Structure formats: C-alpha cells, structure tokens
Image (cartoon, rainbow, N blue to C red):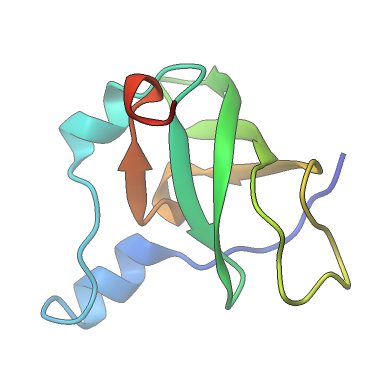
Length: 96
C-alpha cells in the first residue's frame, strides 16, 4: 500500500476561495465505497473508493487513471488519503 502526501484542498480553498472549489462537507460525509474522488500530488487523478473510516475522514482507494509522473505510483495502485485531499466527487452510478 502506498502512502504519500497529497494536496490539502480545504487549506487551498480557505487561502484562495475564488480559485479552488471543493466539495462541501455534506457531500464528503455521503461518500460511499465505489464512488470516485479526484485528489492531487501536483497532478490530479481519480481514485475509486474501497474503504471509508471515521465518518469518511480517512479514505482508501485504487488509482483509476494513468499518471504522467509514474515515479511514485500509477494506475491500479492503492492509496490512503483524507477527505481534505478531495477536490471533486463522481458518484458510483455516474462512473459507468
């Protein structure tokens, strides 16, 4: 399992509210296994949620697209992150 630091979009939104839109807290608390979320390490990418813990604060998922920078991880790798790292949500029913 891969563990890396991802962009904190809550902080980015707080510092630059006109530049960074983020999902509201209600949407984050309604995440479920199978939903896709976009996170970033400098390059944004989609992750399919496989596990949620502590009222959806801690998330585990599988990277669902090829990354340009494949140095640390890529398509199919499992990553752990927090809800504050999510910048976009796609509900499971909208991913197929």
